[in-house]
Image 1 (cartoon, rainbow, N blue to C red):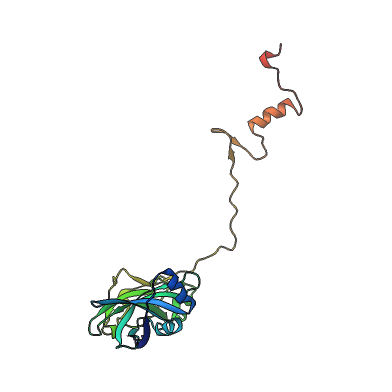
Image 2 (image 1 turned 135 degrees about the horizontal axis):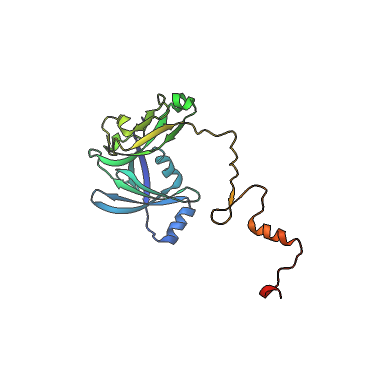
Length: 238
C-alpha cells in the first residue's frame, strides 16, 4: 500500500472565461480549473498541462496549491474531465481541505499473486469485479491504492470487501459483505465436436407426418395427373 504524498502545484488566476477562451488555453497546452471549498471563494485558474499531469500522477495525492506565488492551500482532486477521444485532461476541480479533518475519497484496488493462485493454474478465470473503493481518512492518510493477495484463491472462491484489511486510519465505506472484489470461476469447457441435431419428421398439416423419401399429399396428386397433364375442366367436364 502506498500513501498519498503532498505535491506542490503552482497555478495562475484565470481572467478570461467562456468556451473561446478555454479553447485558446488548451491550444497553448494549458488546462483550466476551479479551486473551491472550506467556505472560501471559488477561484478560476489555469495551469500547464504537463505540470498538472505530473502532480496528479499519484492518485489521491494532497496538493499544495499556490495561486500566483501566494501561500499554499492543501487541496485534493475532486473531479477531472477528460477528452473522450485523446484522453487528455481538459478541466479539473480542486477542493480545499483541512489536514486535521477526514474526507471521503476513492482509491483503487490492486490484485497481486494472480498467477500463483491454484484455481488460476487449473485454468480458472479470475475476474477483478470491484476496482475502486470509497474510503474516509485524513487527507494525508488516503492511500494511493489498496492491494489484496489472491494467490490462495481456488476455483469457485469469491472475495468480498470483508477480506480486505484497511490501512491504519482508513475507514472502508462500501458494504463489507455485498461488495465483491474478485471471483475465480471454473474454466469454460469447449466441446471439440458438436453433435449434429437429429433429423425430425416434418409436420404437414395437423397430425400428418411425411416419412423420408415420401412425397407430401399435394405432390402425390400432382404425380397422379402426370407431368404436363392438363387440370380437370371446371363444372364436371361435360
